[in-house]
Each structure stands twice: as C-alpha cells, then as structure tokens.
Length: 238
Image (cartoon, rainbow, N blue to C red; front, side):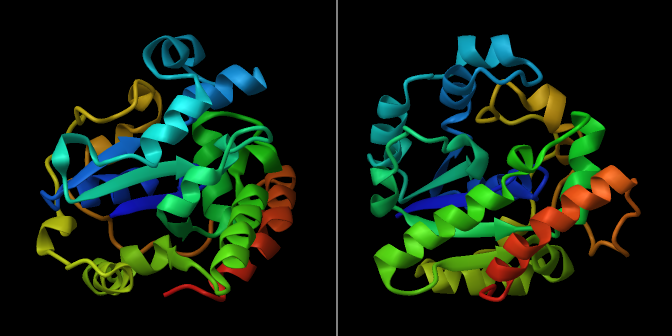
C-alpha cells in the first residue's frame, strides 16, 4: 500500500514518519517534492543549496517514484508530503495511486513552532490553504471525505488513534509504531539538522499538549487566517 500523508510543517509529520518506519514492513520517503518545490518556486529556505544538491528536483521523476513500488520490496510505502510543496504545474496524478491521509494541527501551535525555525512565516508557508485544496481534490475523486487525523489526538492517545488510522487504511496496527530509536535516521532528508532537533531527541510521541500558545498580534492574525481551513478538515478527523 502507498500512503501519502499530507500536512504542513511543524505538524508531528516527522514523528509520524518515524512511527510508520518502526513498523518493520514499511518503507518511508521524507518530503519527496522538497527539492522540486525549491527549484520551481525559487523560494529561500534554510539549507536550500544542500537540498537542491542532494535530492531529486525533477517533479515528474519524483511523482513516478511515488506511484511506483515500495523501495526494498516493502509491503507498504509511506510518503511524508508537505502540502505547500505541491505548487501549480506539478503533476498530482500520482495521488490517485495512493491512500491519501491528511494530518492536521491547530494553526496556533504550527505558527508558534514554525517561527522558532524560520521567522516571518506567511499563510502560504504553513500549508493550510494548500491542504484544504488537496483535501477537496481527493474528496471529489473519491466521492467522500478522505482520512483526516489530528496530531492532538495522536499525542493524547497514540495507541488508540494509530489503531483507528491503521484500521481505516486496512493495515494491521502494531505496538512497534509507538517507539523508535533516538537520533538521526538514514531516511531523513538532508534538511534534518535544521528542522528535526526535537524529534531526534525523542523515542516516541510526546505527551498531550497544554493550552494554545500566546502569539504576537501578527502571528495571531496568521493563525486566525488558517483556522477556518483547519476547522473544516477537523470536522472529518478520525
């Protein structure tokens, strides 16, 4: 099975990738379109030159690989996708060959976390608008809402939430998904040193989060602009 997990940044996405990799029957791919996104958009991101040098920047070859067999003959192929990477002009036909799941997180938490790594994020940077558009595309094709999982539910009860997700996907849940070794992983993208410090220190999902963070007026306005997109998808969460 090909599983395309769609989220914005700072959204428990790396921990989820580690979780699926820990199953033992699942190959994973970390942000397949990142280099193509940087190349086509021209946007400046941390470690831009290193990413372009180390990863495939041809979106057509990336899409073909996403629709292809799992590396190493694994039973499942988990793809950690960033919604903001799917800029206009990139072929999305590969999505029809995948089980598309949408991983969401409250925008106030996303903005607070993102701003610690890259100042001055915009609505486009945090991926909520793009996530809602991709959700609609998949829903139109399926004739129903695709799967949605909220990072808050995962952190509050990882075993129960992951079991629900696996059941919905038609794959067996295993307790191996609840823990992984600390430190960098061979399948991390080259950008990991900038973005993955906290998750490299983890060996499982962190405990439930507390109250929403307080934001500066500019960041609060950004979170408010993203909130309707989050709420619309949250209505369909497992």
